[in-house]
Image (cartoon, rainbow, N blue to C red; front, side, top):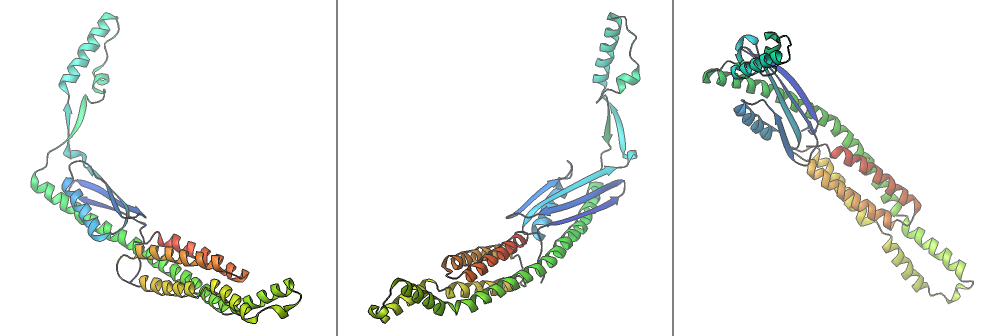
Length: 295
């Protein structure tokens, strides 16, 4: 199973009888499914079907759909707004006589906006039904192409995410190896401080020193954080190979990755462990950027 991106684009042209059209679908990432349609008036049945098809096939993303439709000119008729034309002629004649000006030509008056209007010839129900079916069939092909672009980008993202998880896994294992050295390192540093502060160690209780070292080592122990990070890595690998929409699940895991890494950095008692934690935060942030675009 491949991932699906929330970013996609598709455009297709179609034709039926004297109708010509172009469908366009594009999407970007979003927290949920947001569908916006720009479909001409008179195509309400088409829009309802389009919205249902999108909801049946797309789970997340901000999806914009547009339809442009044209009809051949022989299906158009001209209509003259006679009332408007009579008013304009009356005003033009009266004005020219009052001001001793030549009367305007009919061409000029007919050229005024809305005097002459294009009117589409009415279609019968059977024609409209056949037209709408052709439009829907064309949209389904566009939707198929649209999903293919999202899947193709998702496949590329899957490779990137797997590589980033490998990097996270490597850094966690480095931190794990280093954490095993910490108790001895903490004891060494503590004893060095004791030597620096006390000229005579004879009065220092060895048992008390051992208790202090254990306390410091316990506070600096990152074993629990590392175990949780390994569990999150395993879960993420499982999700990116699973069926269905896993974007939200991966987004939650990135929050958990960050939480455990922040704790690891705050408990780090060695500069090397701090550097590993900072490197982890960088890779996790890159991982999160990719996850934000997964359906």
